[in-house]
Amino acid sequence: TYYFMGQTGQMNAMDAFTLANEYAAKALKNDQQSPFALSVMSFLKLYGWEWKEGLEMLMKALEINPNDPVSQLMAAEYYVLFNNTEKALEHAQKCYQLDPLSANNLGEAARHFLFAGKTKEALKLSEEALLIDPYNLVSRNIHAYALALSGIPQRALEEIQETYKLTGDFPLVLMAMAFVYTQLGGKEKAMEIVSKLEMMMKQMPEVHLDFAIALICVNIGEMEKFYEAYDHSLEKRGLWLLQFYGTIMMKPVWYDEHVVESRKKLGLPVKEKSSK
Image (cartoon, rainbow, N blue to C red; front, side, top):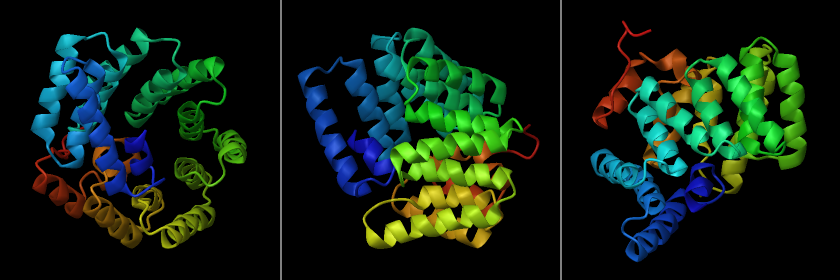
């Protein structure tokens, strides 16, 4: 919970990860063989750029219990970070197959398929999730993204506006809405959302919303704002832009010199121009 709140700008990222690490450490102390605690701790290692240590903990969790959906989902997140789409989708699929009645697991799997450019699969999974829980936020957002990328942006806008009525100015919903506007040619509307996010950060300097601003700006060609938000996000140890790098959300900067160099400095793989 604290990790998610830190990543999505709902509280100070450093405070959130400190608390998340504290509770995960307590859980591991109580049960050193807990796949769930190992998986959560492995992901928290990423906050310290401890890729190797985190991956070792995750592999241990999967060895103890390969049928733990949380561990499978964490593995998918790791492989996205390492730009290995095939392995990410493999683990995302295992996650929802192990718990097919979890709307959240289906929604998270849909996210991975969407970001891999497999829009048809993302639509199917998110629709299945919404049949189980019509209010699942992950699934609602991903369904809107998938509709927009499937050439139905007006319907996507209608859906994300309905979600907005439920959540208000929640950063992930604002980001999805801005993306839908980009598919409708509504750059001005998307920039209004960027301005809203910037105002939210001025009012609450401790929150981290740079990831959302960067992902919106890169898709509307506002590169100066993108670079500024991208660098600020990395300074704050924001992981999402590193994880989203190889996805369709950041396709405009797959080979961008600034982005590529930043990943190389962190020891992370980059796209080769021969890659499809």
